[in-house]
Image (cartoon, rainbow, N blue to C red; front, side):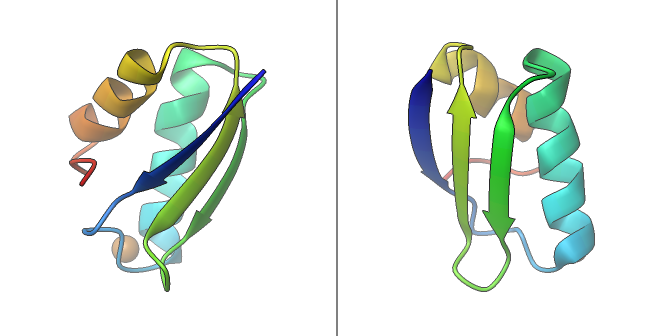
Length: 65
Ligand SMILES: [Cu+2]
């Protein structure tokens, strides 16, 4: 497991956080995702490569800052 800490500036509310969580889990269904709209931080425990995770989040409409 790798722990990733990403900043997603466009994550504005809990619906955004949910979309981001689903995007990550489309890459790794077992990923543990904590997305906090207040801090714009997404903390992910995953076995997927970071590039795949950031790409999936970007494809969902949330560029990783
Ligand atoms: Cu939102």
